[in-house]
Image 1 (cartoon, rainbow, N blue to C red):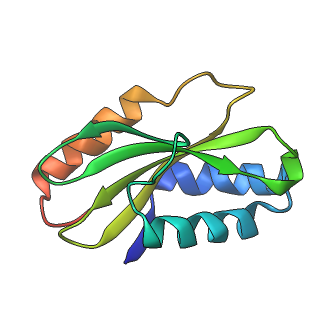
Image 2: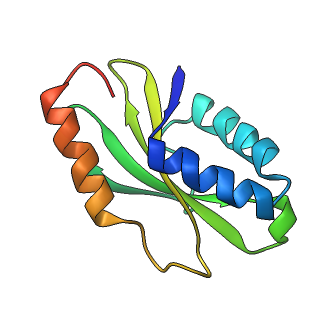
Length: 117
């Protein structure tokens, strides 16, 4: 399984890492979970949309630095290419929902490049 990040995700992650020092380790823990169960297996994972190329999911990302409050992470899972691409990360206290426009843009790019994310 390969992991990639959208440019927006990388920028958000960098910003949050300055505030929440445990985040790089927390992301690595999250990667271990999705490696074994890409679609999740609990109420903390929610499928946003499915296409023939990928599944877009939103999941709770536990951050030890936040102690109970949590971040949300939006990612795409493409089973054919064994790729997980992180699309967005946000703090639930600052933003209620995922960026639907960003997800639409991501899905548009998938139509033009069906074999890669």
